[in-house]
Length: 631
Image 1 (spheres, helix red, strand yellow):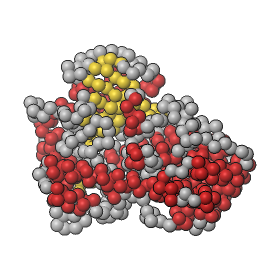
Image 2 (cartoon, helix red, strand yellow):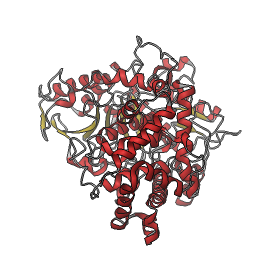
Image 3 (cartoon, helix red, strand yellow):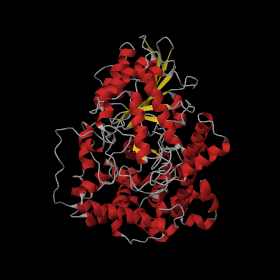
Image 4 (cartoon, helix red, strand yellow):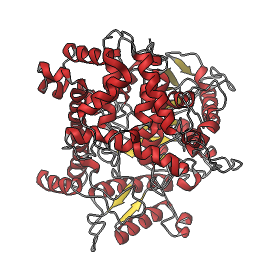
């Protein structure tokens, strides 16, 4: 959907999209969740896992046979897990490493997230930061079937620990994205002596953060859930990661592709600026690995990284030395126009993927998918704790699953009618009162007339569409800022030359002929329009007057920096949210002979339980506890 989509078109999108989802469920359950992730993210499929059995049953029953449902079951471990967690062994091994470093203060064998919080656990051993990172890399390798460490190179970081051209921030990620370990490569950066850790706790459906501060001679301290993390990651904590199809600041930024200036034409031209920055860094890694006496002050931590060899290259490249491997990647890129930085395991060895997902998605791409799956489960789990959830749940399930039972073209007037039918006049009046009392955001300011509040859904819709634009602007600025500084400081270009090359790279479109790419479309660093503004607007209409700020669900930092709301969810919003237990348990409760009967029951039940007075709560009056996500 273009950002200039009309109001009626945006309103119609909810019915078109969910109708298509409902249809896909009835026709082909194994593809019913195009691009979506299991609860808790993507799981490595165990060898003994039985194939998905296709059965003839009702639409809702078919849903339970989807690959996502199978992976949810495999990853939940037991009924005490709020969300899926597929890498408990990896987390336990990492906890054992922390226990070694802190002289046994961590209990080995206990679920890692149950250790009592301490603001200052001293490191008792003489372990240095480089030694710790080397051991962390070994833990990652031992828990990855491919025996490698996946990492993302972040040239322009929005964290408190900055970067500089040629000195990126490194994010090691586990195969399923449940453990992240990040560090700097710039000795002058403020966080050079620190390691930041993000861990997904599927048992309690929340993210937990730790920071390790090292001393130069070894030792230091470990902070669990340090308060400074909330500066970027908010409360309740969530990951920060932009949506498709480019990740500005990451190198390479566009869907994990090293590209030439003209990847879809001949001659391809030279490797573009972001690709050169990435290859230059790989050469730095290669030199550190080949030279034990390297003068690079970051050489010790760089040696923990690997040269990303994909199956695009000749198998013999794996046996070459690191510098020759980098040269092979550069040569392949120049010859073919592109090279995909791989993630291991690749799609073929990961569960719950379908035709929509790129055949060999890279780490940045998978990071969004995996984190989105975890974060949406966290959100849905928190919703169930809200005192009014039982009043909303039937209507929420209806909006996410029953689009095919309405006109394919829905105006705002029609949508208001549907919302009134599901939730009654009390909720409609509460939304109107909320807008009168809480005029914020560009759309609400522009629609600040009394008549606008008579149509609260439209006000929420316009504000949602307008609020996504600053996020796209932020992505472009971040991309431009990094490339400009790299070109000027590392390649000696003047400001005008740098600006020309930055603009050329920013305007590039994805090459539809590259089989590794998600989809052949423009966008990327220029931003991709929010795919589900109508759905988001409907949820805001229901939830925000009760204190649930839907903008806080987004993983995009963007407008949140300036105190605004962010609605960057890409096309994953529907499919990931609708598959959470909080929604699917309601579908099972109302299960009919087919989807049509189930939706009819949902509508009747929603109207019955919603027809009671509901009080308006101020934003964040309900939410905010860093431990449970709910007061």
